[in-house]
Image (tube, rainbow, N blue to C red):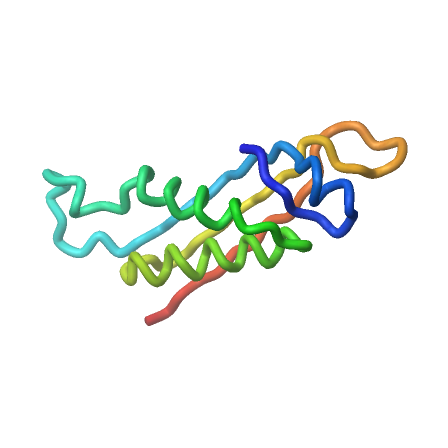
Length: 109
């Protein structure tokens, strides 16, 4: 996914490619898993990610936090959410590879 996050001017202009990994644990209650409405649809999660990644933000931590908050808002039965966001071509001198952050939140209600 291409987005425009970062603290450097060049990142805000040209953007970077990102790789995301998201894990959502939820209380399934008495679900028999016969309808998508009894689960958390990954297409809904992807729609949230696309929406939040479009907002240019200096820090990936803020992006991750906003994605987690939106998932939790839309799916109140979530119990844990982990998200990793990796910048695939980070503008770090003499560095090759991906670099990023992971944020994990638990909900006890």
